[in-house]
Each structure stands twice: as C-alpha cells, then as structure tokens.
Image (tube, rainbow over the protein chains, first blue to last red):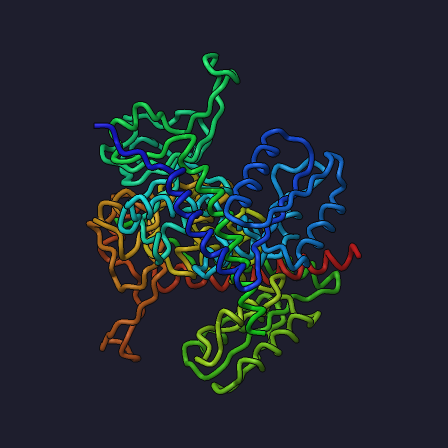
Length: 298
Length: 298
C-alpha cells in the first residue's frame, strides 16, 4: 500500500490561518508586521522567490516591501540599505535574496542584518542561540521540516532520524534542532554526506529520513526500511519534453518507488517548499510581537 | 591484546611546546598573550580549575590574571568587570569560571564577553560561526577531542563517530565539528542521549565512540565493537576507601573491560582533561596573534 502523502501545502495553509489571527491582534494593538525583501540583479529564480514571498505576506496581512537593485550595486550601498532597514520601525524582518552578485559578500550581508530582524535565521548570533537551545529565530527550512513532522503526527522524539547532506541551509542546522532536548527534538540523529561509507546501510536504519543533498532521485526504495517517514528537501530541475517549459521539478528521493514502501512521504513540489515560506512569515510575526512587547514595557 | 592508551597529557605537552614558540615570536614583536580569569565565590572545584589554568598559562609564557570576588557579588558588578576587561589592551582572552552563584545569569555573562576575547568559545556569535564552518574560537573540550583524534592517528574523516550525550559543553557543539567539511571533520556522526532506543545497537556501530554523558563507567565492553577508538570525556567521582581522599575519578567508560577490546582509548584522568586546558591556551595565543595583526595593519 503506498504511503500517506504529507501535504506541505495544506499544513502551511493551516499555519498561515493561525498567523492571520495573530496579525489581527497585533493590528488591534497598533502594530503591523513588516517584511523588507532586498533583491540585487535579475536572477530569474530569485525574482520568482521574492514575488512568492511578497504575495504570501500580503495574503496573511504582513506589510511587504521589495527593494530592487541592479546587478552592479556596490557592496557598500547594499550594506547601507540594510543599516537603514535595521533602524526602520515599521520593518520587523529583513531578507536579502541569495545568491547575490559576486562583488557582494554574503557573509558580510548576513552579519549586517540586525539579529532581532534576521527572520531567515542566518545570523551567526541566532545560529549560536539555536545550538545552545535558547529562544531565537530558527532558519526557515529546518524549522519547516520540524513543523511538518510534528503536524503530520510524526514526532521525532525517540526516533532515529538520518539526515542526508550537511549543507549550511538544511543539514548542518537541522541536526542540532532534532537532537536537542525540546519539543520537536529528542531524536537520535545521524548526519551522512559524500564521505559516508556504505550509505544504504545507514539510511536503512532511519525511522525518519531527511534527504537534502541536491541530487535528483538519489534515494531509492532499496535504501530505506519499510515504514520510514521521508522528508524530501531537494528541488532539482530535470528535463521533461512532455511539459510546456521542457523541464519539471523532482526531489532528492525517487518518489515513485520510495512512496510504495514509506509510511509517509513529502511530495516535490508541495512538501517542504511551502513550509519554508510559512516559517518566514511566522518568524516575521514573532519578531513584530517581540518588538511590540518590548515597546509596551518601556 | 589491550588497546593503545591515547596519552592526553603527552599530546597536550607537545601542543604547549608549539605554543611556547609562537609566544616567543609574539613577544619579539612586542605582544604578550594575556588571559584574565574571573572567579566568583569559593567553590573548591572552581578554585582548583582556575589555579590549574593560571599555572598552565605561566608555564608557556601567557600573562595570567585571576580576579576573585565574594559569593555575594551583584551581577551588575561582574558585568562591569567584564566590560572593563573587554577594553583592556593587554588581555586577549577572558574566562569566567562556571558555575557562578545563583544571582548571576550565566547567559548574561557569556553575552557580555567580547566575541574576539571569548577563548572559551561559548558566545553564541562564535558558536554560530563554528556551525557555519567559519574561522572562530571553538569551544575547548570539543576542540581538544578533535586534536586528540588527529594527533593520535585517528582522523575521523569517513569514520562513523557516535557521540553519547548532547550537553552544551561537549555533545551539542562537537557533532557539527565532526560532520563539517574540513580537516578534523568529514565523519558520519550519530548523536545519542537518554531518549535513544536500544543504545548498544547504536554504540556498537561506532568506529570512534565519544562518551560524554556524565555517568560513571556507563559504557561496557559489550556496547562497543572490537577495534573501536574510545574518547572518554566523563570525570565522575566515585568513593574509594583505598585512596587518601576517599574517592577517585573515573570516566563514563568502564576502562578495564573496554580497553581490552578497543584499538585505542583515553584514560581518565590524563585523556581529554589536559587537552581542554591546552586548547584554552591555544585560543588565547590565537587571539593575541589576530589582535596584533589587526593592529600592525592599521
């Protein structure tokens, strides 16, 4: 019997409904959450992402600004813009869409964003607070994965989670979120990567498998144990002449075969993707709630 | 045949010899590394640790200051002292000996220390830089474990490392250090803890086992595979009427049985402990080198 589909779109919609209510309460108290997105250059994928995020903001009632700059923007000008947004009272979250053109250091950009407005959860200060188990903004994709597990009835506590991939956006921060002593954590966690020996012998131990290495359809049915819960973080373009665009998106998991043996699995698209955006909105609302609480207790 | 003993005392002595030379070079250029230790109250164990660290500093040529305060010291006074040490040009590393008395928040103390002088590697900014794989001060015990592995010919690259324990000082930061794509990393890493099911089935997979859960003699020979490399981070006092003090120190590993099957194993004491202090000295020297480079390029 094929496994259950974990519907990221549906779960993210439920989360956004909850956010709408919190935004109404904030507005009643005179605050509206505001997210500023900064886009440098004309990377078509980045343009799509920024538009999606802006539209998602508007739908739930978050004020959204998009600041667009030409490819040639000097780094210093971007850093001054960030500095200005750090001081803007109506802005509670700042996101700079990556990748930036080569004259701009992503590290400097991340460090320039005020940690209290770092709704992407990329600032080292926030990453460190996360690793220490302190309240902070968690990076959106790993946070979305934890939410997806919890809301689909697959609490990782006591389970063996195997993470494929140690990239800075997913594997590296996700591991400590899953082994920490907290709700959504308490899992035994194994991190695998290109240097792992006999990978299938490790992945077959997983109660929950998170695939985040960016290789199309890499995980096949013989690499998992029956009854596994699979979270597929990959979004790989493969050629497909039968579609209008000539390509389609597939995950890091061979969905057709793995879904036959899994207990539950996320689709691509419609799994982790919508959760990432929902977590960005959630972090922005939380930022507004914290800043407005700070002000009211002044 | 019993396994090789990984001699932390000997390896730390080699490291300190290397530091002496770097300190001579710094002195020749007019800089002497300085470490300020702050001790609040009269916890006898803390007193011992601070004295050991101060003595180790003096032995290699690091200037060592110890600032002692009474148990009742208000938090605000400690924070002003830290602020003063942050601005002191002769001080390159600041360490506040934990635990502090209950009126003092350890979190506030950690946040008060300038990350460029945080030679303990506890500041969230430095922890976040570490997780992102950027150069920073790494926490001393996990860093000492990585050095111990590398210098004893047990490079973790490609090996399966199982870490027992997810505490903030060892397990939590050590895991990402071992799975990162860098020298001393590249291991497949599993983090286990009290919620792990069937622990022996996991520990028996370890090529390298790091025991850091604080339970005396917890790891027994039946929990490891023959040929394992064992790093024992535990320091537990157990009663022993045959000693003068009436107690002795033992690790988290049952040394007598495990050493019979291990390829190599650290003793307690004399394994990880001396490495932790060596890494504190190493971080202090590095801090001085960085600050004096900054100054010379002004």
